[in-house]
Amino acid sequence: MNKLKKGEVILFPTETVLGIGCLLDRECAEKLSKITKRPKNKPFAMLLSDKEDIKKWVLEIPSLYHPLSKFLPGPLTLILRGIDTLPEGVLSENGTVGIRIPDYKVIQDLIKDLGLPLIATSANYSGKPTPLHTDEVELEFDRVIPGRAGSGITSTVLDISNDNPVLLRKGMISIIEIENSIGEEVLLGERVPIYILYVCSANMCRSPMAEAHLKSIIKDLENVKVRSAGTIAVSGMPMSIGAGAILEEENIEPHHQSAHIAKPILDWADIIFVMEEEHKNYLIELSPESKEKIVFLGNFKDKNRPEEIEDPIGKGIEVYREIFREIESANKRVEAYIRRKFK
Image (cartoon, rainbow, N blue to C red; front, side, top):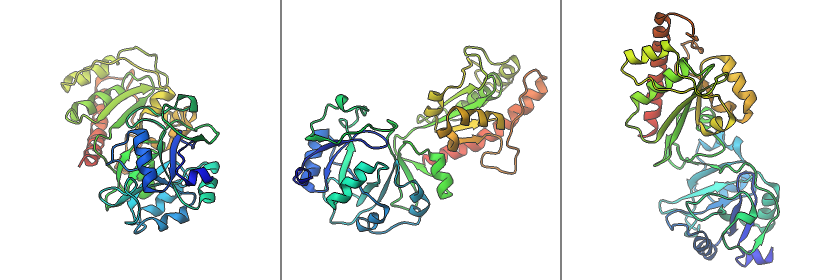
């Protein structure tokens, strides 16, 4: 540990990705900036060993911190108002600091032994992909702490330094999970996209209608991506004749090819809208970690409405029309929710 105290830069694993860092110090921050080619206006995060240490480095603990503390230690970086004695490169120009407590005992023990936080970032050049294995790291460092990085997904970065929480980077903890924890909606930072997934059974009626309709009413939002899939879908099939007819009535392009749901699609999505309880259960079994971001489309943002939306397959055009109206109503609430995030 003596070398580290003299400014040694170490490569180390966490429960998310490989990190690179050194002891909390201005000269070390400058050295780390040169190694990672990180812009000066992009400060490094502080890694602490325990939640109790946070109060030593911030001006105040905001009320939003308390429901979020259940994620710590873990893959969440919180942006707070930092004390003014923090060095440049750690304290931002507007007086904030990023704080993370890795859920990785080796790193927690290292920080405890040092008696000071580490300053760190992911082990890649700024803006480049993050490697999972030490032999893929292109950066200069002095020593490696053995171990394997966890999920390969970066920590979620959430700014709670002001009244309105802002998601600055998506990560392991979904936006829906955060909102459920704090009981309020989260804004999205500049250039942070949001990915919406609709899921039904065959991906031929409800989910493609929902996908096409939402796309038609958010054309102006470049940071929103929408897709759909089915739990029993045969990939490459067109939507049903009834669904296509309804979309044409609404002057919405009915072009569609079905897709069978798979874990990578669930990982891609920030919010997963399902039509029935059966779909929710199937997705949770397929990807337990996606559970918190699965919600019913039917009663989204209106719990007075039914959760489920009926499958119109094999029924008359009037049923399709009725189901589309349910989807349209729900999607207007989805649209309003999305637009609030880009204020």
